[in-house]
Length: 299
Image (cartoon, rainbow, N blue to C red; front, top):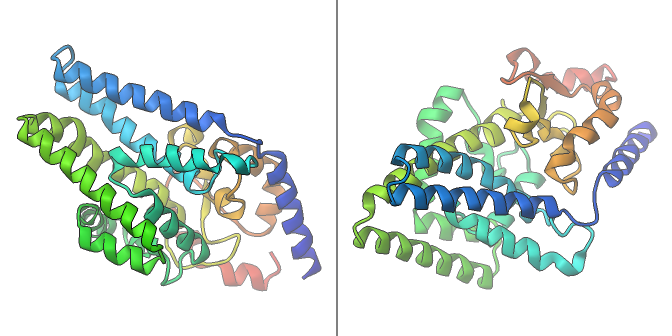
């Protein structure tokens, strides 16, 4: 037991070394992404670039934007500057808009995911199962439910939202819906479809696959070093915005996404000694469900 406690302390120490006082880089990411989205949308609507080109740019925008929400949910933008927590809320709420997310509700939901990772209470447990079942059944149902107000009300209750947070969620849903109805009424339904909805569906599908399904598959192990994995392949850190080191995020959530790799490199001998899953792009079935045997062997 003493060895395990000492290891956790060392992990926490390394994490603190890689946690800045304020993470302005996340705000810069948000600004750049919105510049791409607004620019591509205006250029496409005005006919300067084809709609398909705008759609491609906006798909990248949708995919990448969740990183800002994720950092804000964990208060990783303000980081050690607790008096600046409001920046996380504002930045997160803005980033939630194109994603059709609701910041206060999502923050509650995501904290439950961290508390009950891969357990039946995990909000992301719907991802458990085969990839084909995920891609063609479970994920599409989840995406459709983004637009279901009853589902959001149930989720607010399920994840313990306060009455004020429920009100924020309801008002935000009404605001989103009003904007969409207004755009359609103005005759821009085709632009809305091509420049937002299709990129939203594709971007969310890719993001949720690599932020939810692949990191935790097969969604059964619950130990500190086995409830998610490390995915190493060429360009992974850039393409997955650090989430190829999803294990680091779950171990030390206060570390910003762009420093997961540095923390992993400092802790790699310790982590491998604990039997973490270090794999490639895709989960390796040979490594699934071995946590109990590793623990029993003292690994």
